[in-house]
Length: 146
Image (cartoon, rainbow, N blue to C red; front, side):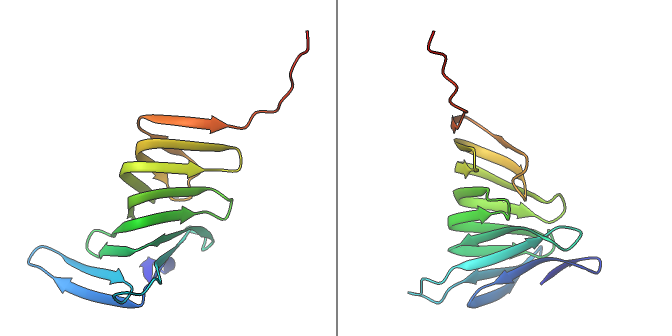
């Protein structure tokens, strides 16, 4: 569990975790056992304690000194509002509550699908900026037959 003050900020779940120390940082590697298909899960919470998003990935590096999680492989971010982000690599920072990616991303919401290269987004995907993108947007079909 990760805390911000007294509030729970995130819960990291994995079948296997290895902790490493280097002279300039400490980090944990979370992943399933070799050959297992169970994925790593990170549940994120708002300052009020509500769920803001869930991140699932094949593996995750957590840098405790920086409050940063790097999710790798088939990464999916899902929010309670039905927004979803897909990428091969996503970085979440506890300090600013943002997710970032420099790779190809796809965001799917109830009304649109966006694809692009590069992303900076609020962790609940309520606001996002995508580099080089294309989109499909559902519009109300009110055609005029004149």
